[in-house]
Every structure is written in C-alpha cells, then in structure tokens.
Image 1 (spheres, rainbow, N blue to C red):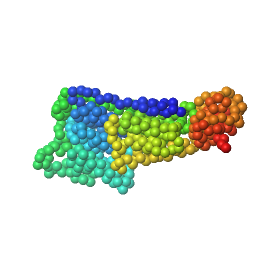
Image 2: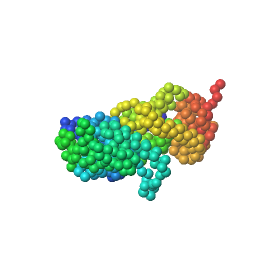
Image 3: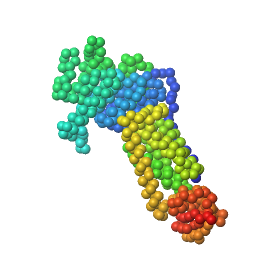
Image 4: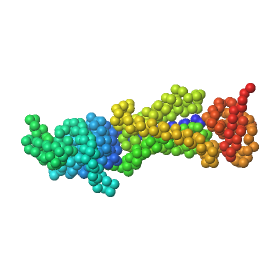
Length: 461
C-alpha cells in the first residue's frame, strides 16, 4: 500500500514557482488593460503583482484603453492592486470608461495621453444578444448604489476625490470645479485629459490626472524611471484555461478527494488514483496560474494526505492523525482560493468577504466527495468494470478461481475492506463484504466473482 502513498505524494508535489531574478536595474511591470475587461485579465493582474513583489519592482503601470467590462473582474483587480506597497500608476492611452475608470481610481497616480478621456462608470446589464438590457428602476438603483460604493472605496484607496468618483456613476449628481459646473445633473461625469489635470483647491493639486504625457516612455521619464527594465504582461491561453479551472473548482475537489479515498481503499493502483491526482493537480495548477495558490498550499495538502495515509495504513481506527490530515487538506483548499500573493505564506484571511465563498465551495466539495464514495462503495463493487480495475494481479484464469472457494488462510494486511491474504502459501488480493479485518486474522473465501475474491473472518475459539 505504501507505494501508492509515495506515488500520490510525489505526483502532487510536481509544481514549482519561478525564482526571483536578481538585478540592479530598476524594474517596472506594465499591464495592458485593453478592450473589454473580463475575468481572464484578473489573472494577468494577479500574476503581474506577484512577479513585481518577488522582483522588488519600482512601479506597476496599467496601460489603459478600454470601454469597460465586468464589474466583478474590476473589483478583483482593485483588490490585487491594493495588496501591495509598490507604487501603482494608470496611463490612459485613449479611453478609460466604466470598469476601466473604476480601476484607474484605485491606483495612486493617474497620467493621461493627449485627447484621452476617463469616466462614465454607471453599471449596465448586457442581454444575451449583446445589447443593453432594460431594468426595473428598483433593480437599477440597487446596482448603481453598489457600484457607487465600490467606486468611492476605490477612490479612497487611490487618494482621489470620492465625490468626483461617484459623479462618474450617478447621473443625478452635479459636480463643480473652481466654481464651474463640469458635470450637470442628468449627465455622467467624463473628463478629458485637460479637465482631469486642472489644478483645484488652495493647495492647487491636480483634480485627477497628474499630467499629460504622450506614451509610457514619457511617463517613465516623468517619474524618474527612464532607464527601468520594462516587463509587459498579456493574457495567455494558460490563464484563460485557469479561468475555466477556477470555475470548476468544487467538481475538481470532489472527484480528487473521492478518487484518492477510493484508491486507498482498493488494492493496486488504478483509475481512482489517476483520476484523483489529475483532478487535484488541475485544481492547484489553475489557482496557481490565477495568482491565488502558492507552493505552501500544495505542501499543506501533501502533508494532510500523508497524515491521512498514516492513519489508514499504520495506526488502527481513525483518530488524531486522520482528523489532522483532513483539517490540513481543508485549510489548503480554502487558502488556495483566497486572495493573496502566491509564494508568500499568510494564514487564511478570516474576513467574511474573503472566506465565505471558498469555505462554502470546500464544504460542498467534501460533502460531495463523501456522497461519491458512498455511491461508488455501494454499487461499483458489483460491476465487472470494478473487478477488472482494482485487482493488482490475476491468480489464474477467472473460471479457475472458483477452486479457491472455501479455502482458509490468514490475512497479510489489514482489510479496509480490501487487502491481501495468504492461502496455501499464495498471496492473493481479497476484499471483505464491508467489514474491517485486522492483519494476521484467519479468514475463509466465501465468494468468488471472476477476479473478485470475498473473504470473511473465522471465529476464534
């Protein structure tokens, strides 16, 4: 049985992180925010922030030209940006509308190109056919109120005027600058580069944009990083795959856990172990690419599997080792789906907004795995497929195994309910009807179904 445990642990540990590169040249990470903002872009931002942290970057710059996009993706991007102390910049190349404007407000510094615009961040619901969907007034107000709160929070984090930010969302607000109305009631606030750069207040600070520059190189020169090494990130096919994997996380966890448990409970190494390992590798791979899971999450899970295996195959019953293993596996899944920088150890963030959804998914996955194990354990042993997949070796022809019926022997390993036993000096894979039988217990073969040999304990005395 131990060869199966080693195989599982080694297979799960085959993930690696990219080592940090040491350099004396200043480094900046440029993340293009182009076209529609969608969830795959969130993975790029997480990856960019993680790499910038590992490589001690001097700046993270969002190169923006977008009509907007998914608000939930924008919220995730804002969260990723605000979890680092690295200075964040937005360079508005052409347009920063809707979700793009919200993201820009969360960065500490905003620069704009000549002729560029920023604003108009009111939420809209798109219909399945691609057009804007009309909503009841109460639903529209609920959505607008939620986005207004988010944009105010983003502006506060970026150090910008919260009233200005809310005027980009609410058309019923009037916004006045230097005694002049620049956004009348009934019109969403949208600023040109010149309007955004005008000086306001007694301290004559920029309204929103710190200056107009022609391109990224000009921006780097303004902020004193003209000689910096530029790392430009793009959405990759792998990150699009990671988006799909993240959406399937509960299913992958359920089949992964169920597959490993069923593999531990059957002799040999077969389809259950392969399925479980592949599902769990996909889970950790997808969340690692998504910028959530780090090596520490995989390590915690491997340790949990190891403790559970020790409980199953070495210590009798089910106690502290097994419970500790299950807890570690549970924590590793939650942490792998929580917002943090990969490669940096942090305990699970217990704030409700961060913990609730991963906790719910993991709980449902564990419950689903238990249901899967119960169904498979009840019905699959009766099928021919199970008989052909679970035996590690065949003792003669299937019909020839009938001669074993009634033979008595002694168990070589614990039967949980499967294992091995000796009969006339031959080691045979056997299974009980569901009972647990200790090692070195006398047994008798009571059923033979092809290669499936069922035994029961002999009463002593």
